[in-house]
Length: 179
Image 1 (tube, one colour):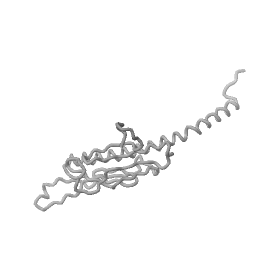
Image 2 (spheres, rainbow, N blue to C red):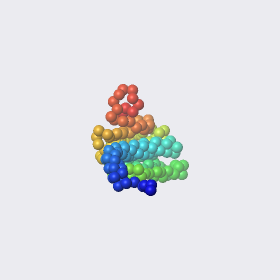
Image 3 (tube, helix red, strand yellow):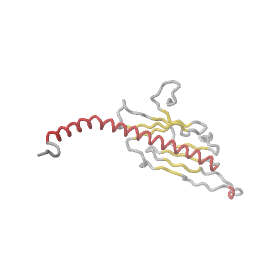
Image 4 (spheres, rainbow, N blue to C red):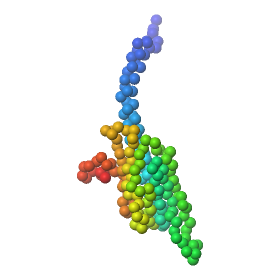
């Protein structure tokens, strides 16, 4: 008679081995998820900044990007002062062109620190110099990731309107990831 299936001892050994492996794999997986959340939120904010800049150029008007502490953002046209003689010549531009809620790809564990909540882009795509203290730096972190494994990211917005992502932990001169 041939034996079919597994014995109880084989099954117990298999379960013990799987538990031992999962004890090492789960923390690494959680770290990977936390760092992925940082990357997702950072890319979303950077994409919102780029979209605001493109809309300002496309519409040839001032567009404001507003960031909230939870990662939500919106962009829309800045109201232009208009006199009665030129009101018909001003193209309509919505107060809200696009927006992203915090629930789209974000997590309550992600921490966003910006030097200012908003920035205005001109019709040339540059940061509006008439608006003092506009957003120029956003730091993104995750409070659930161990400091030794944490991969914080930063968005730098140049005066010309170009947004780039960098890694504040990189200090090597010449490294493109350096802030």
